[in-house]
Image 1 (cartoon, rainbow, N blue to C red):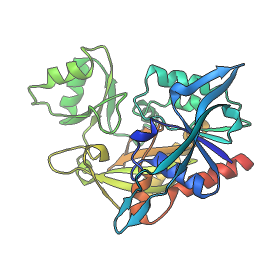
Image 2 (image 1 turned 60 degrees about the vertical axis):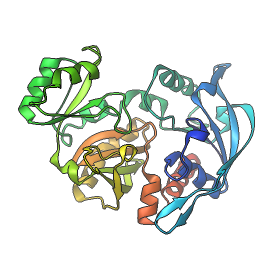
Image 3 (image 1 turned 60 degrees about the horizontal axis):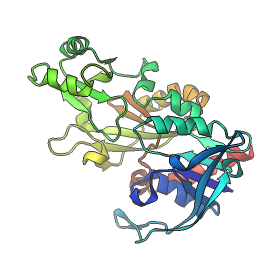
Length: 322
């Protein structure tokens, strides 16, 4: 089979961390062709989606004691060709956030792929519907107290009622721009003005969960079912557990309550074509649903001695053959 991955520039990816690379390696190791492209290489010809693609050959990473080691270089690219995307069996849309106007336009172009010929993961319609912060709001039974607003007074009243809160930009990633708010902070007004761009852009405010000190758990879901998890623990004076800001990763298990959260989300995720998802859970509460380029696979593989990428590719193959 032929797999295409829509990713950020390949030379910016970290082979020992990026889930996109793990998925590409798994497809290659299972004997399939792996191709890459970027959102600015997509086009429409005769009402069909095409792209300038390159076949990539990867040198798989290796495990050395308790970490991954990559070759240098770790990939080789063949020449660029213009191909109809329906010639591919599956396409992974893995462009990193933020979800910009060009990103949204790319999802519109991907709409012009015949789903009977090519599986797009995650679906373009689902990506447009699922802002990674806002999407969680519909699952009211399992989220912490949350508001979304650009109104300083509304945010102040919520913060006062909660005692402490976390502010999240709606388009952020990897913990960028997340703030810890306290009622007594004399910088409150300035923080809100900066975050909301002077009241012009809404932000999410969630009740602070003290359990965050014990970790922010990333759970990977495939077709609505959890297949692995990793705990991300804040280090030093940092309150965020994201790996991108220095969070320490640790092996973990999925609790019964977390299985119930996954079961609660599954029907909606599947209906929206969101087949490969990473949810974030703190203290038994769902805080985010990551659908654009969820990560964590490399860390889970290392800690649990598994190969989640292979599970994902095998599922795609089975779905295409069904």
